[in-house]
Image (cartoon, rainbow, N blue to C red; front, side, top):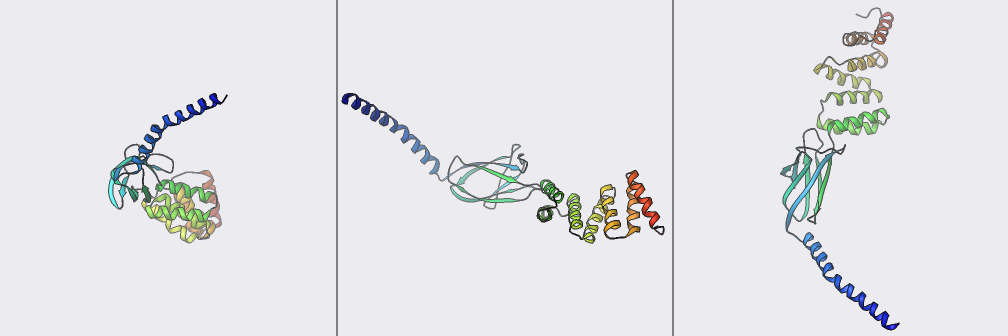
Length: 235
């Protein structure tokens, strides 16, 4: 019985000895991956909807680097081992800059950026949920990208209206109409503000008439007739 046990122990020892070269290779490989002066770094940039961000400019420690390809991928050649700041810039997107520690040749960098359209979509959802503080923060970020975007102006006007500041909302809506007078939704929103919040019936009548030149809505026509009957002096 003792002889059998010794033989089993011997086999175990031989097995362990046979693994030593493999362990040594793995250790060497890991050491090689982590001990380097410089190496390429691959990354991917995508947006809030997980779609690739094409033709975005990558910056490395404030200096211009490569641009992303059709799949949102980029490659930084010969990046020094250590700490860096990697940025992403693209028109219509919030700029991004993040710190990284490049310590392994196998690292892949995944970066997410947010577009103006995505910010406005989130702001609209927040307004629908009556989350005014959240909507305000999202609109501020959108306005930093494009303060004259018509959708942004409209949503900011809705925000002011729900905050009880209709006088603040009116000039924003009027700015949209200066650029494009044929905006039925904007005309109707302005008419609502003047009729129900600011109590300026003649102005509301004028806006409803203008609205009907673009959309002959029977409900709005009835509303206009009732308002004109209540205010016969309206021009």
